[in-house]
Length: 331
Image 1 (cartoon, helix red, strand yellow):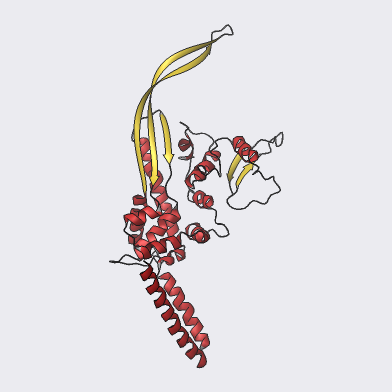
Image 2 (image 1 turned 30 degrees about the horizontal axis):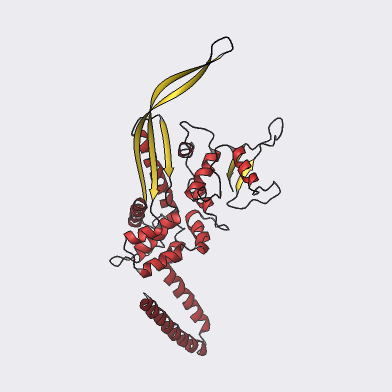
């Protein structure tokens, strides 16, 4: 590996020296403006043709397809498969666990695999139907949805009033079918091993996934600038999803509930923030407020919201605000 890096560095140095000599000669001949234009064009062309061309893929190409539209299509396909798992069997209780890979990991793997394919390298700055299929294939090689059912016999205690002010407890035995749906994903490093990436390809992958590129990923995927908050990217990926599924069922509810807090928790889980203790898993807005207040992380209404913050609202009804949160979301 060290020898390969040394050769690459030596080659780069030679190229820089040769380019510098040519540049000096051109400037001496009075052609410095043209040289600068050529340099810019060459640099852009090199970027577009490299793995970093993915950062230029946010706009629609001549085919009318863009990374954003393909990502939305795959998100819809993912949600449909989740729904198919739920509809395939009859159950009484649904429990969901796990999370899928974040999109920047999937796209980074896609970019390196497609752009550096030894047999058929392709630029990744544009999207077409064939590349869309490649991206879909990679997405489902990274992510997996599995399910199983289990029947449990449980004792349920029911409390009733005997009509004389006495509470009567009645024990009944019920049999319930539990449906367990697990979403799992491979890491970018695991996919690099699966695809047999060499050291150079692994280096490209690490560069694409560097934290300083989070803003570029957000811009490519959602046209969003000015933030590098991962949770915003996850939340934006759900635009168009109606009805609160899979958020309330992921949380553990058997039927639809007011799901704003479930949605925030689901997004936080997708980012690993719940396990890391960054954001709580909460279904009630008041519980979320208490969690942040107890840890000294609460800001009052005078604070300026910035992307990635968890925000709480106290609606002012007929009686005005009561000091209790009624709604929560992600800035």
